[in-house]
Length: 156
Image (cartoon, rainbow, N blue to C red; front, side, top):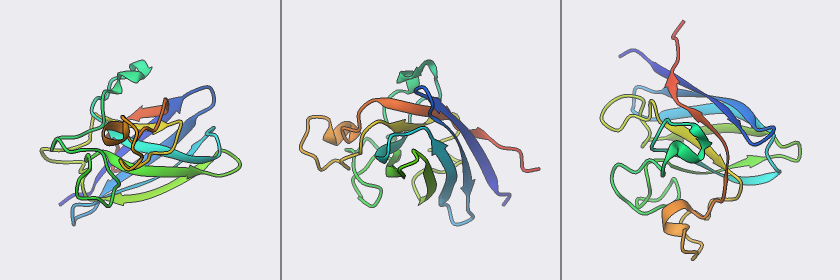
């Protein structure tokens, strides 16, 4: 089986910029590696959203990718949206180095994330445990400060 690769170029609020690479391994997991700069220091919710539509910026990417109609949760939870990837951490310089492996975001098949969007939020994701009205839907992660459409990447 050929290795499937994808890329997302992240843009957003004034200075948020980055590049993420997605690599599906033969065992079905997908690895995400990259760097996003221009963030406020600290935790930021990090999710795959259902739509690859940025006509109205990150606001038109729709809800979290949730093909199995579950409640929001942590990446390690059984009860979670496929697109729930938890939090990334920006250092004091506003840069987040990202290295995530997840089994629910394939680049091929029925629940592929190709053509969808990856979104970085302003606030920490409470992983569905915050007790806020939005906890079980979005993790109460706040505004969308950066996003990019996930597209196939050349294997050359």
